[in-house]
Image (cartoon, rainbow, N blue to C red; front, side):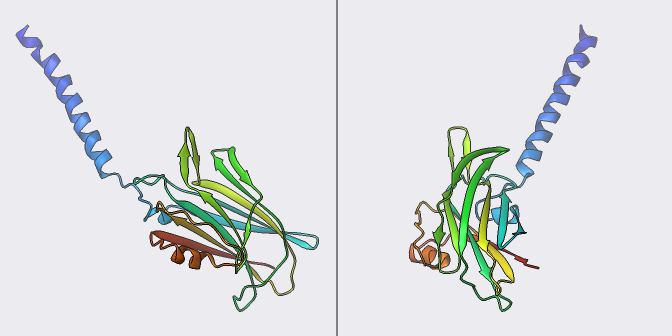
Length: 195
């Protein structure tokens, strides 16, 4: 029996070593906070011409869920601009927001707010039961073509404070965040040229 001690000790040492190695690997893994989440997000936008209209499609997805919790709100704002990057007042025909989880649509809204610069959708970032709202979604919007429009711009805002904002018609999103005292937020901006 004394010669068989190695049969018991060696596997126990291997298991302990694997456990310690796994523990240290997990501890070294970087996780994103709400503040650093903007470094992991993809946001893309495409435009298609449809007769006298222009369709804009925006998709976003977070690379990870924040380690400090899913909280706050998201705002997707779409703005039409001219060659000088000045806002152009256009006729938005319709717009649709979809929040996704994988391939499943878990929330949908056609209600948008006309901001000072364009149109915007506001949504909660939250977990309800097994559904996660905010980290993945898309917006499809259609506007009348306008001769002065040369670019479509998207501004994706995320704040992670307990205070909620309510988008007011013909107000600037940034101003509304400032007026509510929301300091913990970031904004990602993308632009695409209209040919």
